[in-house]
Image 1 (cartoon, rainbow over the protein chains, first blue to last red):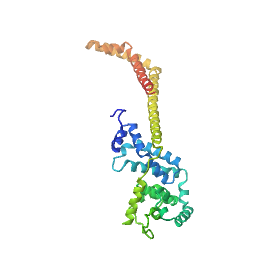
Image 2 (cartoon, one colour):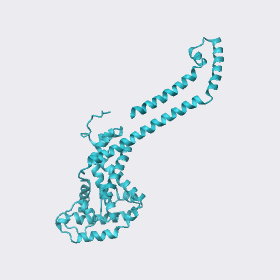
Image 3 (tube, each protein chain N blue to C red):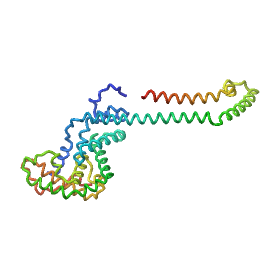
Image 4 (cartoon, chains in turn purple, blue):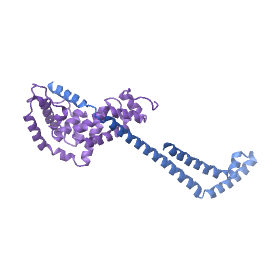
Length: 202
Length: 124
């Protein structure tokens, strides 16, 4: 067992997880320092406000510490915590009865998004992910973030969102179409592209 | 193929998260919450141990243990007398028959309480 003076900054994530599993909280703190921003960014991209994203991210890291022995190092530590955070955020939305409202939000935001696309030039198309995500409706944002940010399959996202698989797939498809239009490199054709994602196996 | 490329690009974009300016403060907040939870857990364990010790000691002292010990002493005396006819009396049997058993039990209970109290004091 390392002494308190041990510097964790040079340790690999897997080693830090092993120390954390042995109860070394400073090692876990180093993991939070490394990956906190990624988890918070994911939650913001899912639609959480900054303060709420921070709250959920904190809860996710605390839950990760409690379950650190379950982390086998098969994927990345960030990916593992992101999945925990995404599920916690959805649970929070469900608890506060906001999930259903978000799912019904589609029409209004789609109109805004269409307006945004209509007058955008090439410069707009090279906007960053944060800006591009704003063009998505709330359910599209949730579904795309969960599948491409948290690494969930369509089936897992459908289960977490308590939505039919087909609904999740169509949210993802529409979301990808909008993102492709916004994120396309200069001059790349993006009209009529067929979305057949790698995650469509559900 | 272009579709898969776009999905990979999107995953890369999601994976690229610039460090937030308050990343250090965020980590410290999480560490503080971890410490708080850990201290609370230790408090609860210590308090449960102390309460258990108190209950055990009070049960030991306040129950009709004295009568039981007295009858046990009588039994032990009879037993030791019986044994004395067969073998020499041992120190332990004579200690019990002299009424030391009760005081040993009470002493052990107080030592247990003392250990938990010392643990609590050490932690805080």
